Image (cartoon, rainbow, N blue to C red):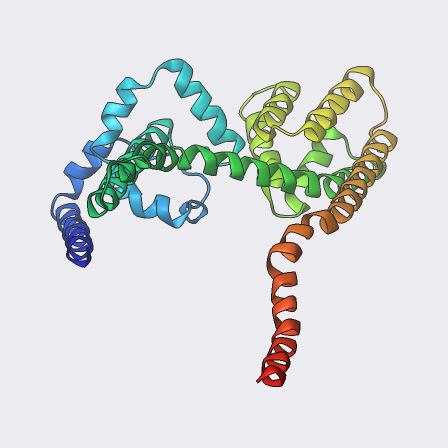
Length: 298
C-alpha cells in the first residue's frame, strides 16, 4: 500500500516539475495553447487554492472544452460566473475543463484506493467519487454566489442611507450614485455600482445600466431598489423619502433575519450536544463511580 502511495506522489511531483520546466522554456507556445487571458477584473486570489493550483494543467483541455460547449451550457456557466462575482476572472471553458480534470483526478484516486483493497465492493465508490470531484467547481460558484448575495444585503442599507443624504442635499440620482460608488463600503455592491457608472459613461442609458446591475447582483432587494429608482425617475418623484423608506425596510428585514437565526441556534446545537458533549460528560461522571464500585467489590 505504501509503495503505491509513494509511487503516486512521486509521479505527481515529477509531472509538476516537468510542467514548470516546460512553461519556463516555451512560455509563448503555452500561452497560445491556453488561449487569450481573461480580461482585467477581480484579483486571482479570490479563487480557491485548489483552483489556482490546477489552473496551469488546464491548458490542453481549454480549446476542446471551448469547442464542445454548447451555447446553452455556455450561457448557464456564464450566468453562474457573473452571480459569483468572478466575471473577468474565469471563463466558461475553464470551468468545464476544471470539472473534467477534477472528475478524472477523483476517478484516479478512487481506482487507486480500490486496487489496494480486496473485493468488488471496493469499486462501488468509483463513480460517486468522480462525480463529486467533477461537481466541485459548480458547487464552489454556487457557494460564492450565496455569500455574495448575503454581503450585498448587508451593504445595501448603508448605500441607501448615503444616497438619501445626497438626495436631500440637492444632488440628483446620478450624483447620488456617484457618491455611493465613491464613498460606500468596499464590497460587491460598490463594485457593481462602479461597473454600472462605467456603463453609463460608455453611453448606456441609466435605466438599462441599473437593470444590468440588478441582473449581475441576483438579489431581490437590489431588484426592488432598481425598480424603485426607475419608477421614481419615470414619475419625477422625490428620491429622499423613497430611499429612506427602503433603507428602513431592509434594515428591519435584516434584524428579523438575525432574530430568526438566533432562535434556530439552540435547535442546531442539539445534535452536537447529544452526540459529543453529553457522552463525554457521562463518561467523566461515571468513571469515578465505576472505579469506586470496582474497588469496593474487590
